[in-house]
Length: 427
Image 1 (cartoon, rainbow, N blue to C red):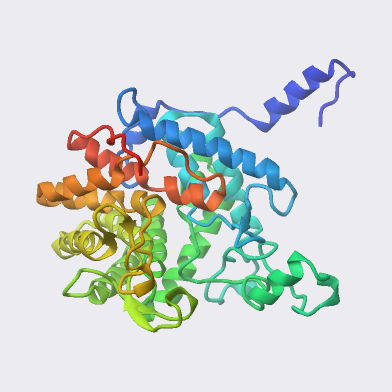
Image 2 (cartoon, rainbow, N blue to C red):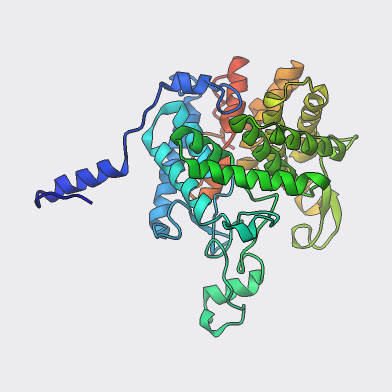
């Protein structure tokens, strides 16, 4: 509240803008990126080094702002989040927009990215997170992308829903996203909360991150297992981040237990982490296969684990190279169609994705090249990354976050190997 005589409206607007962007103590990008706060040092935004990526990020960010305006996600319940996942869900920070924006802010100090990520972290920690002592024992404390963020208790046949889009959505998703879903493994993202707690000193963000990560570590590790690869990856990412930012060995121990099951789950022949698929995705057929995009999340967690583990873990290093082999030999559709959505599924045998699934796996392929010095990994990396930064990420928050949350880690590894730009080819 401002107590002052009425003046020029422009001055009032300027004052309001100043109040909404308080002073932010900060060091140089070179210093911030070199601290290892992200698990490892990464390169700051540098002229002549992956300029195409940074321009691509900028374009995608502008599209997310346009999407925000178009969907009017400015209300008390939704501010910081996005709308439109599965037609009528809110995003609930899937793929961790807070983390994506904070990583880019560390690299370039563009205040827009810092503010946008903080808005997401605050939304995710309040609206989307379940609070209160009665829920402390619940397995999973955060809502996945759901209708109205947290669902509704209206029955799917309620006359209040009318006969339009909402009624059709309720009929389609029933007691799932319409009622509100807590996915205790596959849709809980805490890296951004930990990072913003460190950057701002906000005790609430740290309390939220610690509460959720403790819940996962306590509830999941006695019998840790998963089907889709990302359901092993996100808890691992969260546990490793918790250890990185808190130093509490409880989280490192949890990560070790998750790693042990992951090593057991890896298929000896191919290096994949297959699981059963059925239903509409495979046209009713039950089959065993893997999802490349989800492997990108799992391997990100494994790579971050190696950075925190004080013990030698050659078994994990070898596992990561074998995961890269699976991506190249089992999931990629030759010669250049991209990654299959599901391996061994006849309906995806000859179709692939050359966008999000590529960039989310760029680090594990780069790691295999770095670790083995086998030129074939480097050649594949260049092939799959050709033209990736020619266009723009989607403006929908989920797609933008998926595209940008970890791509720079792979670019940094390739930079250290002398690669600072991708071939300019049409995808």
